[in-house]
Length: 291
Image (cartoon, rainbow, N blue to C red):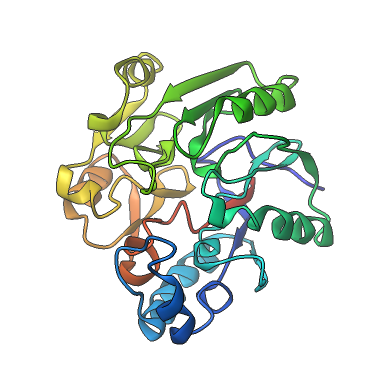
């Protein structure tokens, strides 16, 4: 029976990922595509496979069901970041449509995959609505925060709000800053990662004052990521269960602060699969069910 998920922190039972074999295809394909997809540098195929082996091993140790998206000629390099084409609720998946045009083909491939695996679909964005899963953050099981920025627009917020109205109590719209412009990837999940019901890793410099204060008022302790670690995806932390999390290696201050807060922290080398494509462990995973 499908249990769904309206939490970023409960124990992950089922997750969808996409291996670099199916997303990056080959070194030759990476050579042809990395600039088009605005990667910071050309990923190394062999190193990417090695990094992903460690990353997936951590998942397999803690998650009961790990499902793999297939290769498709409708998708590109960014499809390794399996979180963005959908967002899961207790009632099923919302099929999104990315604000990055190169990623818009991922939605239909994802929809076919969900149907083939008997995973319920709640709805799908239509018309001019655009949204990435990285802009949708469950603060708790009744509260959904949505980032309004280059990847998610007002039309999408309106449609998502309508889809979840019967089983949520509050939608919080969080305006995102211009920061480095439309070509860069800035999601709401770039600046906040829930690690427990009352613990979050944040980069406050890009966070609206009202939203930061709202988190504090709700009793959520904030772990502040330093500038250099933000640039290394330090604020992108995946909760496998409450205070059991995964981070990109090379963020020692954030790791230490998490451990001081009682968290168990797993690291993986993510230079090829995370840093160059600006997608940390939350981006690489799409939690289907948390229990």
